[in-house]
Figure: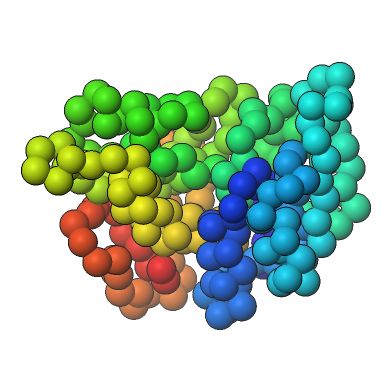
Amino acid sequence: MTLKLAVLASGRGSNLATFIKRARQGRLEADIVLVLSNNPAAPALELARQAGIATWSDDHRVYGSREDFDRNMLEAIARVGADTVALAGYMRILSAPFIQAFPGRILNIHPALLPAFPGGHSLRDALDYGARLSGCSVHFVDEKMDNGPLVIQAAVPLYNEEQQDDEARLHARIQEYEHRIYPQALQWLAEGRLRLEGRKVRLLPSAQPGFVLSAPAGAGLVCPPLEKF
């Protein structure tokens, strides 16, 4: 089933760019019908406009509550008939009414191996902690930040000795995997292959066997294995 996808972004929109590219290639079964932002100056909005995608934005700071802002987003999403929401660098916690409007249909990507290093400073936190592995996680969104059931994760090494990693280098290495695992998770959702079983996500077998695992250059581990991406 082709997803009617609404994408929420607060910044550059690098994952949005990947969604657009993969959808145009026919590798991601998604019709991106709306891009929304709490930052009217977000580059992601211009990226969407250049791709011919409708946009909606407003400054969340002028609203009396999180629920008021989210209510306006819900109205905009309802007008275009989106059935799925993807958070792509959206730097706001969603309210309970928003989450409840799309049960099992909101995905987020976080630049860490959840449940380790949740929150808005995960790269710095992993480096400061001296972790040996970092990565990214796609998860269903629930009412607690960075808490929902995990769909797919990718791990990458941290270099704490001779290479002296910093946030920029680590972020670039993680993003290489973000741009693979996030469209993969959405494609699995489009194929109806993600089954929520409590805190766990079960990936159902493909009706089209024969996919070959692919991975970007460099050391890394992805689980479950990539198929189309």
